[in-house]
Length: 451
Image 1 (cartoon, rainbow, N blue to C red):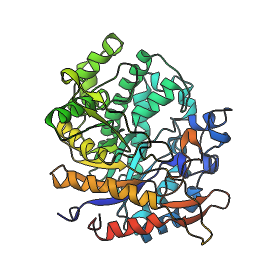
Image 2 (cartoon, rainbow, N blue to C red):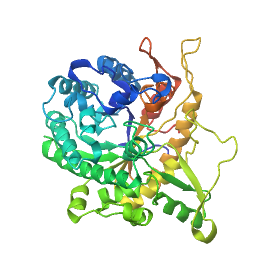
Image 3 (cartoon, one colour):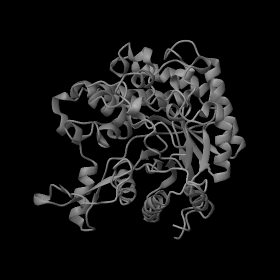
């Protein structure tokens, strides 16, 4: 097969805090990222998301770019505190109206909206009540989700509950690198894991109850990928085991998170890794968590090679000196977009979407007024080539969302990292389409024939 399937969906992805700006506009409340950005030394050069890409005011211009690009789908997130400034209670009508307008403009442009309910901007006032450690936090999320579903569920069909829980728990509540900046012991982090999984389950229930149209529902965790150093059966089995594995001191696992949500069980790998630190999961908990999902979204940027090693336990292979890296210093590993979907589908048996993939590059506007980013084109071509290979092998990957449409606020890295197909001058808000825009437009037009 020279192309992706005819119904394969091509899109880009963003998140609310990273692009919207307008942080005090029309009644929006504060999130933990507002507070984190205002804390000295937390974000590179003191950058904040107060303005970001000003997408709140420029969304029509940005949708025009999407239309010109030929996008078939667009993944965005809802700012919880635009809808509920205090995290719960009275609805802010102007916040819902913004997403009304955004949704309508997307549909009028022929672009299918994929909506993420939570992409890290947790309400400050709920955090001050205990945040994700509070046993009420799953219901807080469910109540928010229901309000969004009741308003937008007559038009939006495709939903994701939570984005990258490994990151907002592991970096936000473990290492303290991200908001809210906590450094909790592993047992408390695992308590948050359970509450977040319950929030997902209650959120799915809220979407099914609140949407006027029958929704397609998934979520978007990190894809923690290990891939075989060679095609030998031993290396492949080692990579499979490591992809399903758990460390005992961090949150970056597929199965810790997804076994309860998809399979309705605590992962044996998690029980072995964490032992008594793992909270008890009752049958009622697992029943709530394991709501039927229509797809498994996964964000994959990189992977780690492993070999069979002594006694078949597997051994990580060190990257060679000078291995290609992105501006974020992430290793370039196209193989991760083959083996990640393959292993995840083997375990969870769900259709997949690649909900994020891309690279940070050192991009600027050249003297000819254009932005030349050959590294991004090469990177995406290599990764999409591996994605095509796994699709041709029969793994049901249904779509791909490049991260990101726009250069944007990259969390603790501020505006240092540029992931966009579109360059943003943050001083003037001028958008400049990069060379990769033309390239991606041709990928979409040819359904990947050119890769």
